[in-house]
Structure formats: C-alpha cells, structure tokens
Picture (cartoon, rainbow, N blue to C red):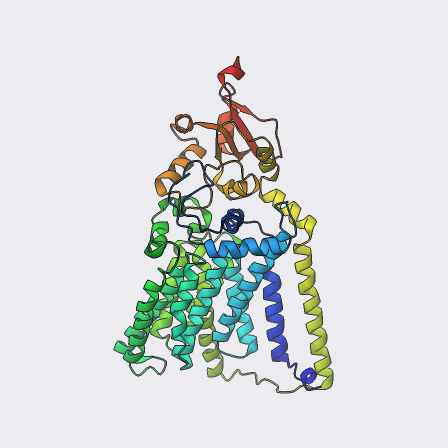
Length: 502
C-alpha cells in the first residue's frame, strides 16, 4: 500500500518523462553509416583482430586505417545479431539497433536530469527541450557512446563542483574505455579543459563565488586531466588515436558538403529546438538573479560556437546547456516566490488516478515503439532510404571492374553487397580532404570528371537516378550504358567495352 500511495504527481511526472524520452528515441535505423559499422564489427568478430588497414574499398585498399570506433562496432554488431539480424531489409536485428540507440539516449538524459535544478516539473520541461534538440542526431552509431560518456563526464564534474563529491578518479579509466569505443573522446577533453579554464577564471576573478572549487580544486582537475590524456593511448593504435579528432577536423570537405558537419540550417524545423534552447539559455541567464558562473559561461559559449559551426555538435551543446538553463530558470522562479511544494503522500483516489495515467502513458510508449519497429514499417522506410534493390543486384552480378558509388550509399553497399569493394563510404578519416573533393568534383560533373573516371579504371557507377552525374552519363550512351535495373531512385551505369560496342 505504501508503494501505491507513494506515486505522487512529481514521481509520476518523472516516470512519464523517461517513458516519453525512450519512446522518442526508438526509431527505424535509417543512417547509412550504421551499416559499415555493423560490417566492421562482423569482421572483427570473425577474425578476432582489430583492422589496421582498409579491406572494404578499392580506392584505399591496403592503406592504414585507424578504426577509432572498433569497440562500439563490436557492440552494435553483437546487438544486431542478438536480435536476429541476418542482413535482410527490415529484419529483427533492426529492433536491437533501435533499442541500443534509445537506451544510451535515455540514460544520457537521465544524467542530465540529475544535474538540473528545480522541481520535477521544471526539470522535465528543460530536459524535454534539451532532448528534442539533441535527438536529431540520435542514431545507431558509435556516436551514441560519446553522447552517454559526455553526459557521464559532465555529471562527474557536476558532483565535484556543486555537490562536493569527488569522483574525478573515474575520468582516466573512463577515457580508456571511451577511446576504444569512439573517437568522440575529444568531447570529454573539451569538457575537462573548459571546466579548467572556467574554474581558473573563477579563482582569479571571483574567489568569493561559493560554487568555485578554488585553486586547490583547479590543481586537482589539472592532475586528473594530465593523467587522462596518456590514458587514451591504451588502445590498439596507441598514441596515434590522439591525433584522430584533429585529422577529422582538418577535412574541409566535411564542412563544405556534408550536412551533419555543416552549420545548422535554421529554416529546417528539426533545428528549431536547438534555437529555442540557445535563446532560452540567453534569456534565463539575463533575467536570473544569479550571475552565470565562469565554468558554465565557458562551456555553454564554447559548445554553442561548436554547434553553430557544425550541426553534429548540437547534441554536445544540449548536454551542457540543459542543466545551466534549469539553474537560472529555477532562480528566476524562486525570486518571484513561484514555488510548487511536492506532496509527500497523496490520497487513495489521487494515487489510483496517477497509476492509471502512468499505465496509459506506458501503453502509448509501447504502442509507438511497436509501430516504429514493425517489420513492414521498417522495410518500407529502409527501401525509401537505401538502394536495397541496387545492392542486391550488385551482390548477385558484381561489376567487371572498379565501382564508383554515391558517398551517401557507400556504407550500406559495403554491408549489403560485401563482395563489391566500394569507391567511398562514411569513413571520412580514411578518405582525406583531397580525395573527397575529387569525389565531389566527379559527382557534380565538374571539368575533367570523365577523365578522372578513366584514370581510376571505373567500370560501373551506382548513383542516385536524378543526380547530375546520372544525367551526364545518359548523354554519353556510346561510353556508358544504363542497366535495365530500375528501382525508381537509383541508377547503375556500366562502361561500354569495345567488344560490346561492336
């Protein structure tokens, strides 16, 4: 009876919040990069070795490849296989991929919730806003581990700074694990260095700040950070792993041509929650009686700049900004005496209503997830997103020579047609800036595109049917013959050989 009567409105709000977050994060796997991660995880499981050279493409075959996501790839492949993944479109393995994404997203936001101030209603409001901003980049990829570990790093720093609980010793082993799961470990160092700078400024300019850790705390943070840096080297690639984030940032083609790396387009509705979070943070910090502390200022301004430069960093900003927003909104409400005191116990009638509401929300969340993960729904969505028929055609009838393929499809093709080496895929750290710009020059039909295809011995081209390159190839039937294969969205061209022409 005590448990039943203990479901207060605040507890009901928290339970509903996380049910809705989990349901929101369950989605059909539609990211093409998911599939090359699964294929790599399969390779590692089969060989028992982490790859050191590329074996998936013909353009980089045999060249050194630092697979900074190898650990996460094994996990993703394991989850996919555990749920019955067989390589078929919309198979049950996709359920495992969706649950993997939802679990890491929900646990990450739970840590954000713990860092927020205010009652359950305020926390729920800001967490929903932060989750909606971050959710646009939730997908079954290794980056979900970076989302979770980023939240965990911030939580450890939060405990140290705001609750006087020292768990900083967790950070070096956390970095070891993170560096073997995803190259996003750089996010952890951004949080560490941002906090170090913020606390140093606070110790220097605002030593009376009750939330400042002081110079002793700064020294402790610096020591932990200094230990965490070499800890990253405990991976199959050693110290070279430290250079991966800088090498990736040095690929200018990413920012110039790939959507998730470009600045966010605020005309797109999926970016509006980020705009709302940013504007809300500025407004709340300006109206609050509490002056924003130096660490919050450094971290929010730094990650806001990152997000404005590259949309993929919106999730990083959301992790940082959501607790800061809650702190200043809570202070603003308290200043005006707008407080809602939580009920410790509720009446039997109110408790029954609360349990009924929880059951209804649980039913709705399960229904939403079931609809999203319905086999037919997944098959239709993936056939719209991926060149399923094209991959099957290539698998059954491999081209007689090198393939040129769309960047957007490379990850899926090397998974669904593993016997055909791809030209390019989502491993941008393997394909350098010069290579990616040459690929873009060909795909956009710029001067010399045909000579470049000749020089590379391209015998077949798999691209979007309405692309510029497809139109150019159709204008040269004496050189390129379009395959009768047609799925309504993709096109396959094969080079006309002299024997064929005669």
